[in-house]
Length: 64
Image 1: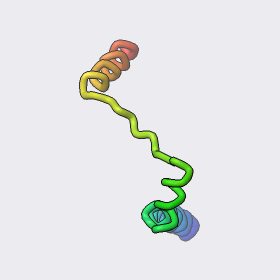
Image 2: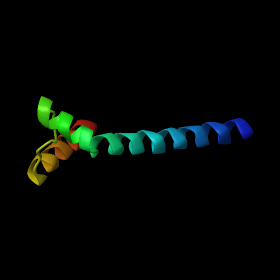
Image 3: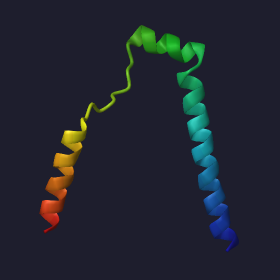
Image 4: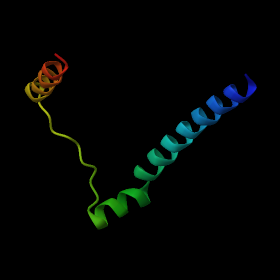
């Protein structure tokens, strides 16, 4: 039980640190400067509700 709780707490700590560092770098002055200089943009999928519904219908039809 101790090993399982240790693994879970380690994983939870990893997630917290990962997101804190990622957020800290992305929104710091240096991070913003680097993004502007090298034109780094995160790709955000541009999906409409109709596209999502079509994909869900395809998945449902494949399961039947």
